[in-house]
Image (cartoon, rainbow, N blue to C red; front, side):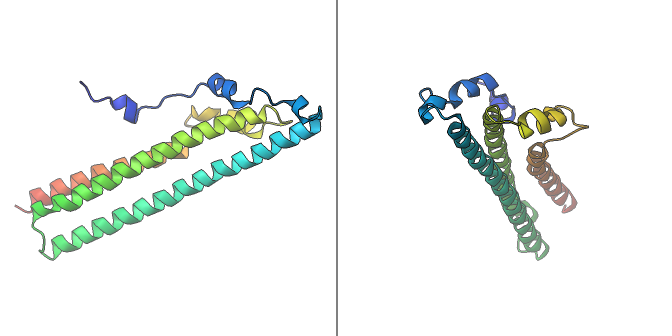
Length: 185
């Protein structure tokens, strides 16, 4: 059985119609608010505000996770380098810090990927909520103006870039380990 790389590294699109069909509660509509259209609109607007705030908080948590993993990787790399330079570790003992660094970068990659997936779904729901509001600043305006993230010359989604940082560091760590082993002979 082949390892399903596309399942862990590929991107699956979320079908907007699947979200739209599940978003609205069946028995709740304007008539549920004693026929008051304004009360219904206020309820939709309040839910929209809360949901946008939740999406923003996820983005903030993603930024904190990036800072945490960058600091952790820096500390681990610094400690490994200090031990190696002080001759406490021989070259092959660098496998331990390398393994730790690779584990950290893998965890970092999956966490950023998870945040990206979560926010993708949240912004689709935000777009669906905007369909019930007088304006659609995100769904019909901003996201369309940015080419929906498809045209990298107009906009490159930040989480795509963030996801490559741990991968790049992992490659550099392996490369540095190989250089350390080769030059120590």
